[in-house]
Amino acid sequence: MSPVETQMRREVREIPVAVQRLLDHGSADIRRAASAIRARDPAFMISVARGSSDHVATYLKYAAELLTGTPIASVGPSIASIYKRQLQLTGGVCLSVSQSGKSPDIFDMTRMARDGGALTVAMTNTPASPLAGVADHTLALHAGPELSVAATKTFVNSAVAGVWLLAEWAEDATLCAAIQDLPNRLEAAIGMDWSAAKDALGGRNSIFCLGRGPAYAISNEAALKFKETCQIHAESYSSAEVLHGPVSIVDRGFPVIAFAAADEAEAALAEVADEIAQKGATVFGTTSKLQHATSLPTERTGHPLTDPIALIASFYATVEQVATARGIDPDAPRHLKKVTETR
Image 1 (cartoon, rainbow, N blue to C red):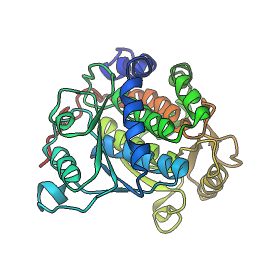
Image 2 (cartoon, one colour; image 1 turned 180 degrees about the vertical axis):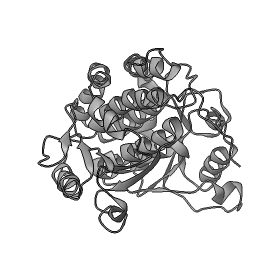
Image 3 (cartoon, one colour; image 1 turned 180 degrees about the horizontal axis):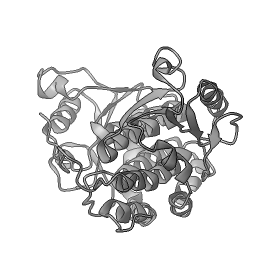
């Protein structure tokens, strides 16, 4: 634990409470939106987001495709905000994710999607925001105020709200039960001891983060947080891609963290992690299937689609410690501000 508790650390500790608040107060809106999606029976969906919110959208892309068989494509907001184009989206669903709901390009793209025939669903922590005003359905995140520049509990609540929406749409009772149990699982996940991975970073200024399937989104978010809070050059790769070139820069002691859920991709990711470890890298993974890399203690959630949410909670607790050990204030990363209003 940091000698002086940062705002980021306090907000990480609030994650289980924030998720419980969403479960207590978000049900009606999520079920209404799920019912509307089920009635539309979309052949496709699009997502609109940037930054950490776009990593949530990546997680939901895999979740939707695995759970419902409905493909999701990420559409660049600049198509509407800069290029002023109109997409034909009749019969589709647009899922917009923005913690603040204030970014003009997310707003413009959501409005364009609605005008183009899509059912629009916005997830935001600010229900009175411009984004909420333009969407057919708004899912309030109920995360409470988030003061640290680094998003943590809003990311988690966005992921929970999104996968809950999908679970209600698919009427998947097993996944719904796992979601209801998440506050307990996240409390345990925050307490996982990943100090071995923290210590392995030492003075290293580069790291690879790996994932596959829904956990690839967590790899993306982890790499962003390493850059944002620790000033570490971090790159995220699918474990299916990292051996196709990027592995060439790995030298002895090069740190790697592989994020694995308990799903069909776990064994394949473990094989890649072990192969990189045999090349001399210092590799950690959230799986017990490793032979050469080091397993990190992991809280499983009872469903492979909610496992990634516990993984990011464990990571957030660790990356805050990495930042403070380096003498960096994770609450106020240089060059950054809390809300980025991109046009």
